[in-house]
Amino acid sequence: MEFATALVTSSSFFTKPDACLLSIAARTLRCYSSAKPSGFQASPRPIRHRLQSRTSHRPSGFVGGTTSHRETDSCMLPRAAVYSDREKASARTPTHVSAHLTRLHAALSVASPAIRIASASSVTRFLLSPRPRSAPASMTMAAVADETTMDAVQRRLMFEDECILVDEHDNVIGHESKYNCHLMEKIESENLLHRAFSVFLFNSKYELLLQQRSATKVTFPLVWTNTCCSHPLYRESELISENYLGARNAAQRKLSDELGIPAEDLPVDQFIPLGRMLYKAPSDGKWGEHELDYLLFIIRDVKLLPNPDEVAGVKYVNRDQLKDLVKKADAGEDGVKLSPWFRLVVNNFLMKWWDHVEKGTLLEAADMKTIHKLV
Image (cartoon, rainbow, N blue to C red; front, top):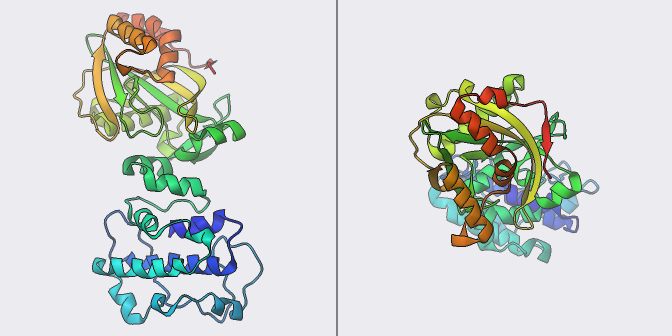
């Protein structure tokens, strides 16, 4: 359904019959709602087996004048794609999914070339891929294509998570999908800046835990970085500004998601915010980062259960081992790469703050009034 809606709303050159076909295709897919195949988005509305109506019909997102009854009739699906009441009932069982997709493909086959750019097989993959909620109707064609090719976990995060948009003074000005926040085109054209956090977790030996990002990450795959790097989301618990509780709550959540550390082992009041930095870094030309990053330190001995969808590897390092890792990254040895935000922290703050970790004086090093612009 989201696929059809995205096509209609993002293409100004579709014909009126195309729009009608796609609207019916969207309605066709709602018949799966009762069966609820694994990962499929349910819809509370029943399928309508005919488009014909005594009232004018305008497909969602269609731009144009009122469609007359005669025009509506001309947009009807072929007979094979019209559903009887019996078919509607049978559609609610998973065994009829294939039959309904066949009808959907038949409907699309009579559309113009603008519609047929999406093959039947790609439509099937898109519509049946696991997804926790509907993609926004404003998705571009490029976003639709990315949804079909991304790793399922990363697809969910990119389209479901809503990052917090801020200005350069860290004032909240709105929210946007993680997908849009990491497109360099949007970062450059709209100056999208979002809030982030970076956790530095030390054990009782004062060794720093590093992670290597998974190969399926959209931005900076397989680079080594600090313990955990992610975003507070646009939700009540992670928008709390008092004592930076929103960022601390987000850090606790994400450390559980990525490294399997239970929340009770990471009390939010044990995260020490040391500073904020603003930076911009391209990843591969298409993707990148533009973040106002909260730097959070914590000293805890924890048990790790890394999530392979998020993390490719973990290791603790002391100061000398970290310096060796930086040298390897500089020389390009062993394919070692460091994330740009981690590199900025290492170059500007980390060794000085590491002294305070060992002395137990981290609170003395905290400066949350300054936003360090390292772009």
